[in-house]
Image 1: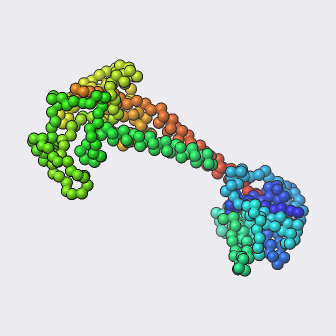
Image 2 (image 1 turned 45 degrees about the vertical axis):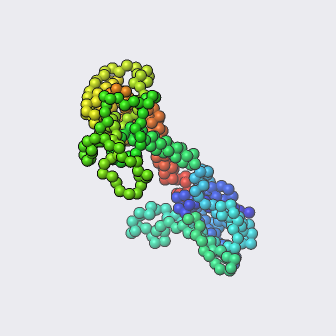
Image 3 (image 1 turned 90 degrees about the horizontal axis):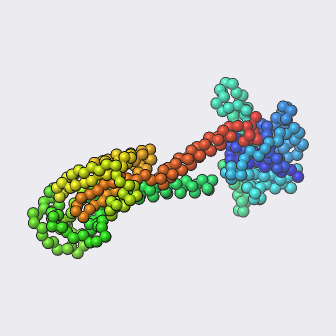
Length: 157
Length: 229
């Protein structure tokens, strides 16, 4: 079983990713897309301890040379952050999502896409590619309510 | 965070309470015809005062149309409603101490017992409603002597109430009204409580600023995010 946790306030600068309880670093891009229909996509792009860039499936693959960081936030700082945890065995049927410690139910679609451009936002437009022009922080969960309607909520602020 | 908020609130309340007490003391010793509240004359000695024939009662200011002779006026049923009477009902005894706004002492011995004999004593006559009133100024050689004169002149600048000015840390001058009508004025005393309160508040503000700067520096460093390169 693998546990992936994201602690954030909605800004990349204050976002920490934990894998099996350990804070990891060097992440360039992280994408998780889970649906009740069985879609189970997760990608992590990171710069390993050997300087190479790796692209792996976050919830399934073995993450080699993944940099491990000390906990970046104190307990006091963590109080102002939200925590999303995903526990999974590799398939959607055994995946449980927690929000600030509380399990969520009725999830139809979960999408998390965080990417750091690696360049300051004031980078001149002529010198940056369209594909990585700016940071991306998308975190949405679509729920099925009791009356059958679907609601999409943005998480992490 | 809660402790910091609690400390900040305590300092703020302490500062406000000092200001309120200061204003209350100033108003207590400040009597004028306009504004304020109607009240009976205050006593500064334990025994009830007997009106001396040397200090006859006179009508109020000449700005108002006052009768030359004192007359009895029926006490109104209520101060509210009706119309304002042109003449005032009871003339009031004016005191020179109304321009000071200082603190009252029952006797000058209390002050001298604690702070000793003044280095210099100056006797002046200041105009009042009763004519020239003798005032004894007691100088003790400190900074509060200057503030005493400022209050005596009736002009205390607004910035004396700010913690940036030394006058903020001194109390108002002490006033003794003697039975013979003379007045003794003693300089204000230094308030350590105010000083420590201001220093504590400044230290707390400095601590908050330092903590904010440190937090921002930590955020700009590479340890605050998994996405830092």
